[in-house]
Length: 511
Image (cartoon, rainbow, N blue to C red; front, side, top):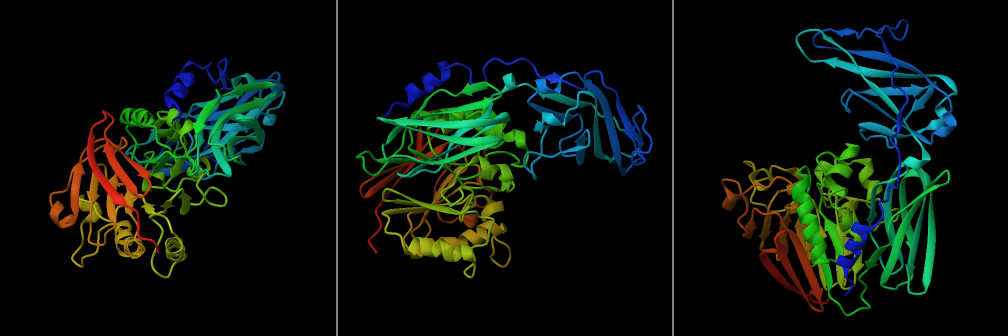
C-alpha cells in the first residue's frame, strides 16, 4: 500500500513553494486621502461627519506618483472599513472589479498593473457610509494599494484534488497574483502536461492512463518567475486492484481552526482513498479569506493527496468560490448534485437546500440514478439530516412537520426514495455531533458533524425528536468506511484514535 506518510514528510521538508519574495510596495504610503459628500464636486482632507442613524455615499480619493509602472505585475487594494461595506473603486478611470462577483474581500487581489500610469495616478472610490449610532460620527478611511512584482508570486490556495475515475484526474489551486499554471503528471513510463491560462484560479480536468499510482506537481509562471510545488504522490483507488476501498466521510469543520487541524491530521494517518465532506467548511463561504484561514490552510496536506468530493452546506452560503475550488463529478465540475460509481459503490451528493419534491427535476434525477444502479452499496450524502436528536433540526410543529425545511425535504422526499431502491445509508452533517439512527425504512441515517465546529449535545427531548437513535457521541470524529466484496464496515473514530461506533452492512440484493 502506498505510504502517504512518506509523501507528507517530503512536503514538510520541501523548499517553500512561495520562493523568496520581498515585501510588496504600498503605492499609497504618504498619500493623503480626500473626501467628498457632494458627489465629487468638492473634496476635503477633513473626514466628513455622518449624522446619527443615517447613511451617505462618501467619495474618497488618493493621488500618488509612480516612477516605473512596468516594474509591477499586479495590484492588491484594501481599506480600513469593514469588508462588508458597499464600495466601488477605479484607478485612473479603470474600474476595479472583484475577482469573483458575489464574494467579499478583505483585500481585492489581481488588479491589472497596466492601470497604473507613469507619473501622476489617482485612486477614486465610493463607499457607503452607515452611522448606526445616536450621535454624529466622523467617517475616516485608510487606503492601501500594494504593488506586487513577479517575484512575489506564490501558491495561495491548494492544490486540492477533486473527483476522478479511471479516465480523468482533477485538481484546483489559486495563486496570489495572476499567473500561468502548468500541471505535470507522471506515472510509470508516461508523463503528461496541461496548462491553465493566466489568472488567479486554476482548474484542471485532464485525461490520465489507468495506472493507479501517479505523481503530480504544479508550476506557476509570471514574467520569467516560476514557482513549483513539490511532487505529490497519489495512489488512486481503482477496482482493478485487490485492496478494499476506504471511504472517509466528515463534516462541519467551520470556525474553530485548531480542532479542524487536529481532525485533518488524524485523517491523513487513516489513509483514506476518498473523502466526502458533507458541508459547513467555513463560517461564511462568501468571505473569501475564510477558505484559506479556516479550511484549506489547516488541512492542506490532506487534500493535496486524497481526492475530495464536496457537499454544500448552509454556511457555504452558495458562495461562487466554493464551486471553483472543488471539482464535483459533473459535466463542468461545478454541479452541486452529483453521482459517481467507484468500484461497486454508488456515491450520490445532493444540495439539501434545493427542492426534491416528487415533481422536480432533482427528484426525477435521483430516482433515475437509483433505479439504474446495480451497485452493491449506495450512499447518499447531504448536509442536512433526516433524523437528529437536536430539536432545532428534527423537532416538529403542532402539525407534525419538522421545523427545518431541509429536514422535512430529506425525511419526506429523499429518504423514502432511498428506501424504495435499497440504499445503504443517508449521511449528513449540520448538527455538531455524531449520531446513527436506524429508522424502520432500513436506510441507516448518520450525522457526522464533528470535524471541528463547536460541539453540542442532544436536545431536552431527544426521544421525541429522534426515536430511531441507536448511537450518539459529542466528540470530534470522522467516519471511515471500508468496502471489501459484499461487506462494508464503518468505524467512527476520534482524532485520538478511539472508535466510538461501528456498523456493518451487507451488499444490496441484486435488482
